[in-house]
Length: 242
Ligand code: FPP
Image (cartoon, rainbow, N blue to C red; front, top):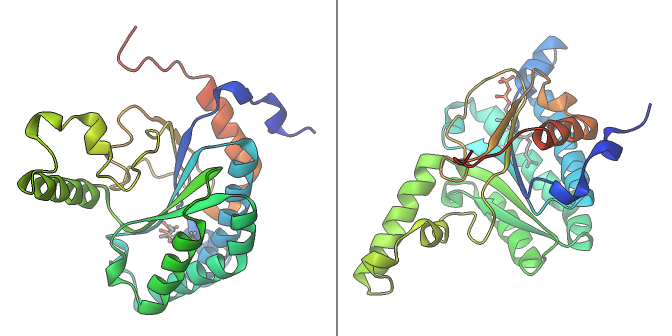
């Protein structure tokens, strides 16, 4: 059987794909494994999906790795997630550089342990001039938090006279978001059967197409990504027009 990639219209790819990576815990529980094993397997899918997106020519890929609400999880699960993030950066950074991918952390990093901050900062510094694809990673990320943060920064710039009231429009507002200079989210993917947005990219998803699936994130292969893109290409996007 051929790959679905052959059916994708390369001239109308989504420019920006966002994924709420969900279902790691359930994947593990179904196998009587600790939840952290689901996160470990999920990290392998991060590697696969970053590679597949880069090969397709997606401009921006946003992965929701850790939300502002995830601090409510047990401490050992949180520390395993931090470990996996460090593992991901350490093992993938060479390839990410070679593939000309820029890493952009979205969220307030200051709450993380210093070794996480150091590693994420190193990845961002090293990849800052790369321009084939941007890999946004939501870390202590919340959509409301992002908007409030943008409003605070705009207010500061207004007070300092850097920005005038009449300059504030959708385009300038974008400059105050973590996704500055990036296209709006075209395609939002949420696996695992949940039909929620969970505080993800509330501003950027104004006109996104939503793609939900019962597949759990550790089972999310490249072919599933291609299927989501094919379905996206069959949608009629009108942006409020007719
Ligand atoms: C949701 O599944 C998943 C997360 C909260 C973490 C996602 C993190 C990774 C895949 C690995 C680390 C990230 C990177 C970028 C290397 P869940 O635990 O809520 O699953 P459940 O709903 O089945 O319990």
